[in-house]
Amino acid sequence: MKTKQIIEDKPTNRSVSRTKTLIIFISTIILGFILFVAPNLFFGITKVNGGLTGINLLIMGLFQCITICSLIYFSLRLLKKDFRYIGFSLSHWKRDGLLGLVGGLTWTTLQFALIIPSTGGVEREDISQVVEMMDGSLIGILSYIALGVIGGGITEEIYNRGYFINVLKDTFRNPNVGLWIAAIISIIFFAIGHLPTDALSWMDILVPTTVYTGLFIHTKRLVAPIVAHGVYNMTAIILTHYMYYN
Picture 1 (tube, rainbow, N blue to C red):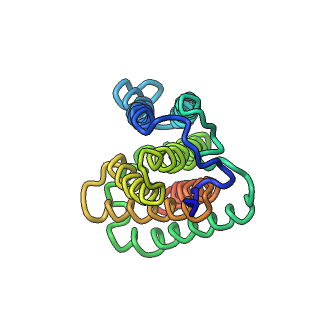
Picture 2: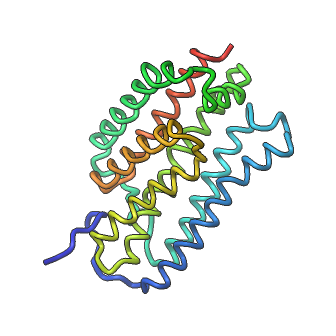
Picture 3: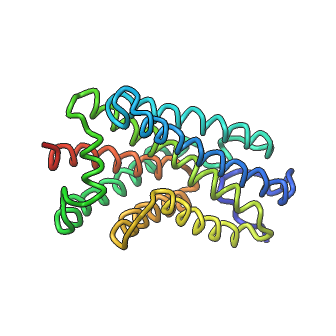
């Protein structure tokens, strides 16, 4: 009985050993995390051109996308695979895009119509941090959206969902077991990377990342989670600006 693959139309044979795959995976994840954090630390510490605000946010998003996607490209080359293996496919993109749109807007609606207003609004630490990073200018808000969509929606999904889950599952003898273990670890890793500090912040990150992971596993492609993540980040920034920025 053939084991079902998470990526469609891919061969079942493994050309790289599990041990080598695990070493490459761990090295890629660690270096990728450093690349995600680096621009935040650089602008946050140096305060160059105003620090974590304005056009710098666009620069951060582009830096993360270019460096991390390049890292994953070379990592996949070492594993004798390509981006299609981690779900980068436009087949069924309309259906996947619609699923992602519904998922992202649903979470936005729950957050801004119910959860955020009933848990402190602008007094919430995460909302106040977002407001602090806004400079009120058009270029500032567009740069923030670019960071949320490019650095968050696209890059984080390629790194945390596509690469993380599909490569880590290859280190298990049973791909089905590996898939679910990799998915759970991916959710936890993604959540911890956003530094939640209390039960509310844990919920705020665990719910959407579980949705993104579910969309990825269900569709076997990255379009749905990228759209869901990008739509939520974009709408959250816009609504925060209009609801809480003075």
